[in-house]
Amino acid sequence: MCPHDPPCPDAEAPDREAARTLACHPEQGWSLLCNGVVLFEDTGELLPSGIVIAPHRPVAGAV
Image (tube, rainbow, N blue to C red):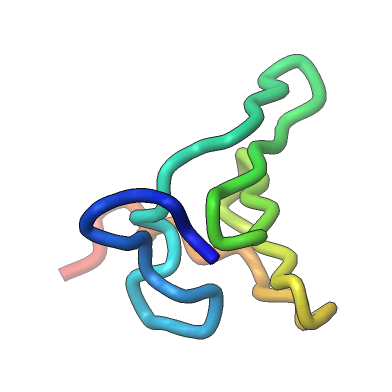
């Protein structure tokens, strides 16, 4: 459970990336969020359930 008030978004929530960072390793390209999500610098994610979310960077010049 998240100790923050208000609590961080759940790992399955659409706004899961808004959770607070617990550990940051920029030299390795990843951060661990409060909700258990591992967020990679390429915007990919690994959820606590083992589900992999592919990188989802915005495309430059997309309208």
